[in-house]
Length: 113
Image 1: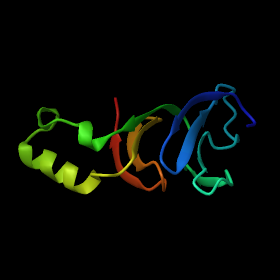
Image 2 (image 1 turned 135 degrees about the horizontal axis):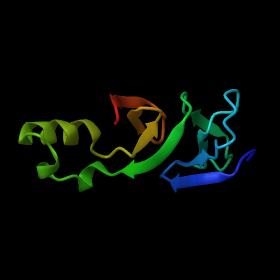
Image 3 (image 1 turned 180 degrees about the vertical axis):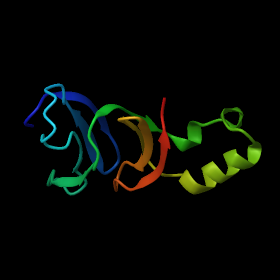
């Protein structure tokens, strides 16, 4: 790695690292990278396209509770949409993203304050 690792998480098919971006260089390499280890080649599987990543946390949809949602219907839709997926919550800049940890697909983006 070109920079110090700040956080990392392992998932079924990849591990994700958040690199240090404290040098403030706007032209630096991306700082949230997923490496594939399912095929044992450790190639880069995806790179998060935004900078200023301040934190990442895995999300396990099956551990969410109905009381965490506005209505039971919101809970049911959430479970239907994300059941069995490995998700990652990413805080970058003034936004919160929910992404698929194995593919890097962004499912949700909302302003975070």
